[in-house]
Length: 156
Image 1: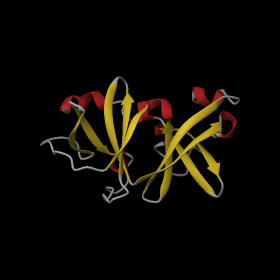
Image 2: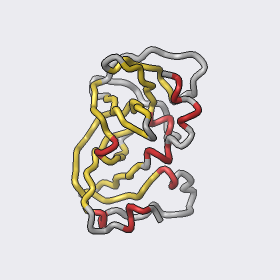
Image 3: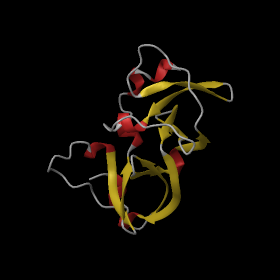
Image 4: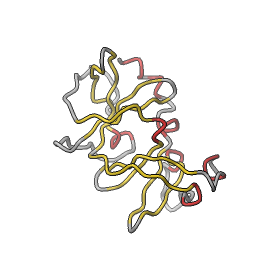
């Protein structure tokens, strides 16, 4: 069980976003900023999830299609698409999402472990899951998702 699930009384500040009509969230402490979609510059020979790079106030950062990274079909860019600029393992990475939906504060007690088995293989990418109204929101573990990011983070 992840450490976060043991802190049931703690409040968690999260940002929720959509990928293919499914909600995900991450801690706000890992977010540097949220930007509207802007075209990126492709870089040859990068992994399929790396869309390219962009200039963020003088620093070139990789932009990742989070849908592909999570094993989903590629996201389609639109006027609602956003780049969530994160800090993961000391690296700045932009995550392309369909749209940012909310900033929430939840109690650690609302977070439940991801069920094991029945074909669920990417549970290591999730710190847990919680219900909000009629929706289920998957709480992503960016450090686990980008555990091998050192392989390509030097793209920028």
